[in-house]
Image (cartoon, rainbow, N blue to C red):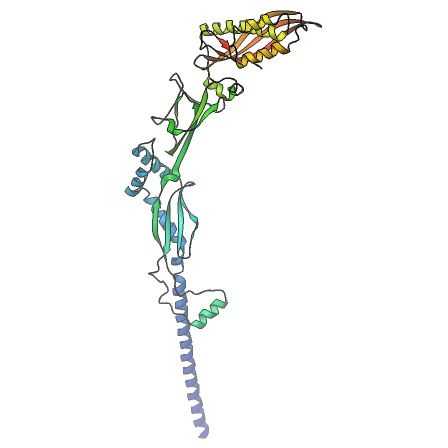
Length: 393
């Protein structure tokens, strides 16, 4: 009988143990489920606290709705002295619609609660957008995690923040000046430059008195040579080609691969060419005769005075030849003629002339044929032509 009662008590104890254990397990499971649910709630909003989805969404919307009245007004308010409002609107619209739209973080504009991005069209900035933390929405306000768990996760390198805020667009601004281009044109100062129907004036000149490269050796000797100026135009939207007219009103194109002789018209008028030929022939004869140091130097020097300006730099150069010549060195001089190979008009009645001059000189060792390739500036602005410069080529 006693054994029977003992067995019954043992069975009740086991049942109670099982019930308590089950309740404990259920309690632990409930706690675990609660903690997991809180961890899941925390993790589920984490993506909403990242800036990338917000800026990506903004850029997608910008690409779909790129042109509106506010952007049009911004464009029209920009300076565009060489283009109309309609031209600039259409150009900006085409640029934005054609080129890739992107964004890039602005250096020095990243803070804990705000980030500013450059808006880019290709490589050119056309605006900015700023994102800020929306502190009115704590996404984990109702998340409750045990302090012990937060401490344990912290030891594992996982930081649980009591506040997580989403990002939102705070401010956007557009400035299309980054799409501007500039234009620089260098041309003779008597040329007329037009840009989209607008004639450029002195207010666009940024450099003056630029020498022609092919006349550089002559500027220090002669005052009346032409010079160039450089025009610079800013606030151009897109690309504009200048229209260039020379001093005679003829439209032309400047070739960057050619020297400045392209600004000097080749002379084809037969009357001018004949006048230059006769002048060069008389000057060459007297010049070679003086250079050959034969006979009385006063004769060829007197002849040269018919072709030069007395007292000029050219006159001084010839006097040096007169003074240092060895007049007993050569005993015979015979002029063989000249040949004009090229005549270019510098400006007005100034010409750059290339020519050959030939003569025979009898030296102690025997006769010697001379051939000189010469280049001169010839001035026909006065009563008669004068040779202003001379260079051996």
